[in-house]
Picture 1 (cartoon, helix red, strand yellow):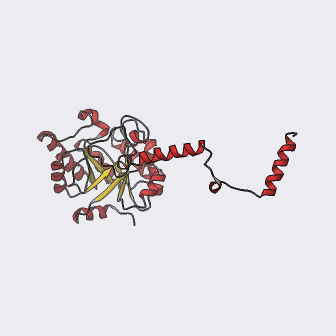
Picture 2 (cartoon, rainbow, N blue to C red):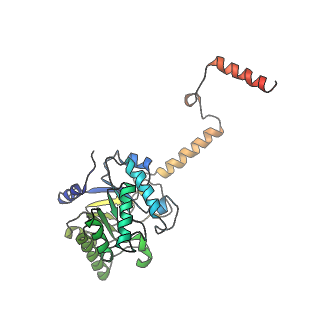
Length: 285
């Protein structure tokens, strides 16, 4: 499977072929993802909770994002990589946004960057696109500014908020994003937006009518239990399997059944006997 590009994602929308996307944060896991049919990965600032043990995404630094993006990109031969722009890396002016997005592209080797927000960052998105940086948008529930939205809850349930999200969708499309993430909004609203835009929509908690879907990898694989949003479906329970494997390892270590002969290196018996004699002489025995 060869890496898809922006033109392929547009074509998939036109042909109503769904786009699959998951998060990734390190080389090892990305190596596995790259052997699957996943179309895109997001190196998300969600690493704050699932990798760093933090309570929100706002503490993730630019350097941390660059390091994670570089690890993931090195393993992504067949998968399109989008890197999250962390909190306050693009809000302090267009020049700052250009500098940080450029670093994510040059040092993190990503194919595109992602920014949270709609109409308020339209000019920033346009500036990035104008210098050739592909941008993915993100509207609805935006975790970096969740405190302004009343916390981590569904957005767009009333008419006023729904129309604002619609305007955000058109704003980021006009600014030049190649796709937009719709997070935690009612399915009917996501359907209206998806059918109204020319660019693909990628849903997370936004219903089945989006052009694609994204989930946090640790949620999908059952490796994160601190909180499980309503929209998460677990496709495996690796957390339980990992715990069981580690307990079996501990049991075998304590019983001396690991390592056995199969998992140990041997040496010539004559050399072993000489070493035994050598250590006896060395210790004066």
